[in-house]
Length: 246
Image (cartoon, rainbow, N blue to C red):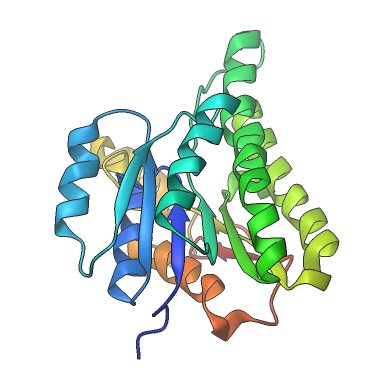
């Protein structure tokens, strides 16, 4: 039996990048998966058509908008009688030096990455409480742990998600609802394909394993935390960063 057989899981921002890798791996290991996208529905539909298994679906959702999140999860619970796992992966960046950072750039990132994660968790808590079971995995970032120049907004949002996860892990452990994070470092995606060789070399010089991670490296950590094999793990962060930050 596959590791996630019989589990219904929802992934935010699942149509591309790390999110699509997570969706693929979860489906390959037996889960039935729903995932959200914000734009480019053709990417979401293409991924949906390629997934193994049946019952998978996609919904459009802007997680910075409370009404949008509520409407999207109403669709999720129409499709899933029980939700066993939630992966909060969706996020944005608005990088800028602090002296140049506009209030809107800070607010946009906090509203999407931190408040949006909060809103999605709020939607699943009552059903998970009723089931007395659930696993929530929040995708954070190495820079939420280490800091990074030009990303005060993004690092604050990811550090906030990690701290919130620890609080919720303590709050809901008695109901067998677990909260964990996966913090990627430099991962090969379409965003890293545009790097020049000097830029890539500069990045790899900081990584002890001297390589960028694969999307599947992140996805496999998420898969583990959603599975029953991690049933005694909560309030933790698995760093998938090649040793970039220890």
